[in-house]
Image (tube, rainbow, N blue to C red; front, side):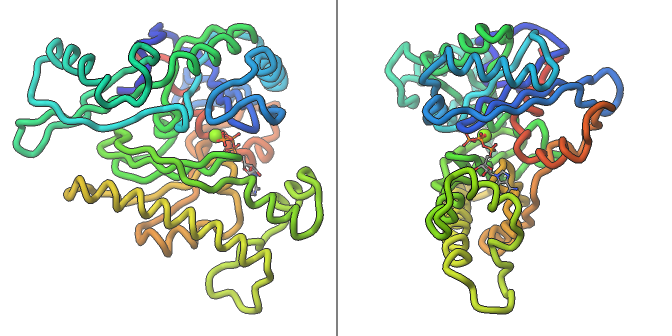
Length: 356
Ligand SMILES: Nc1ncnc2c1ncn2[C@@H]1O[C@H](COP(=O)(O)OP(=O)(O)OP(=O)(O)O)[C@@H](O)[C@H]1O
Ligand SMILES: [Mg+2]
């Protein structure tokens, strides 16, 4: 069960370029996986102008194509097979139960039932599903159903094609991230992006709930813009350079107004992540969630992990999607590693080549 929307473009390939189209940047990664550990062969990131992507949907495929082309060029990639991801805001993911059915019966049942669950107009979406487990009594099949609006998928595919890529797979973003996690069958993943963040619960390796979390990197930047009268670029640089904008709980000294606002934002995000766990546990009393991973550019905020640890009561780590990956000569490894957290989706997409 590698790629939930795989039926859209299933073509076997062992050399795909992972292209993550976020709200604020396009990231492209190519891995060489012929030897044991994957090797980063190409990596490119180019910022997206505001207004191109909104809630996971592309508003300007031509403009997007130009940025994708640039991201490929900076990474030294020309073209080729590519895997793309659909972000949580544009995605429907849910675990549903069926009685025990044969594979063919299940296919029909999901087809009929998808309209009951999927919140998009009939015929207007792509969907895929995978059996994720059986209930305790064996009288139940647990099935993950994922769907995305056709319009959203088609616009991203068109943009990728105009940029010289051959999209061969479309993934749900959480699944791409999951592929980069070490031993995380039952875990919570919080992806803190520029505009959008989301929390996903995985059970036995399958995403069972994905919820938006109303906090994002930009909110922190805006606090700095307001407090110090900076423009967005200046505030962004300050945020990325300055350690300790978020105090460590228990730190000495009087917190400033900026410290307090950063703390409020992070605490709210951590509470929202906690609510995601509680919400899932109400319906699934036997659920085990034993670890949390923070990823996305926003997770680079100094000390952020402490706030999530306090709130969640389970071990929390900052995820490094490049931990199991080598970096080819010719790249500055420090630079590539410093991008680390932002590349989980792109690396996960690039890892999926070779899967059926
Ligand atoms: N060192 C850092 N410290 C704090 N924040 C950072 C740092 N580096 C990047 N960020 C923040 O990470 C965010 C970008 O994260 P990411 O690249 O994961 O977003 P995206 O995937 O483009 O957008 P989205 O997921 O919202 O669609 C920006 O808000 C940026 O300010
Ligand atoms: Mg992102």
